[in-house]
Image (cartoon, rainbow, N blue to C red; front, side, top):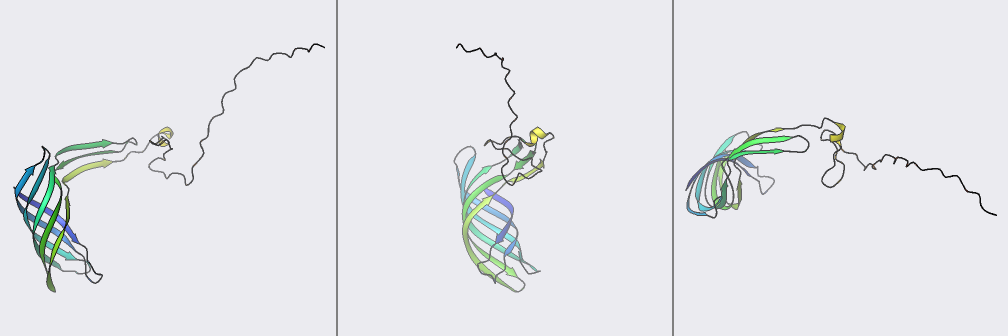
Length: 191
């Protein structure tokens, strides 16, 4: 299996005097070990290499870099339309394409900037998400009744465009209607 990817990376500095390094990369990998765990999940292992365009915090110039590493990854395909509608009327519609993945990696990298170069060895966890595009639209309740619907836990919920009360407000109930009763005159007591 051959894999090509485009991504964005960031390196967190280990000391305060070292700037953070970040930027886009192109990746090409070959994964000769592939195990199909199910119709939707694949476990793969192999080698990859990247070409990196790098920037440093606090520096105006860009640098270049490259990485060679090994990766073991659990991955699955994510294609199709997704949607969700909430009780408050907000909606999300979209589509995704690509593969999601989580894995373990180990790599060696070289980074070169105008004022010097360095290399490092890295190991860690990786996570990838598929490409997704969509529309999110919010709607607010149009009636006072909808503005005070109860949440799943039975508590009153504020409308999404208004903050809730700072302190709980006691629930107010309407007085019960009086039940009509017949007036029976008092009977005189025997002496």
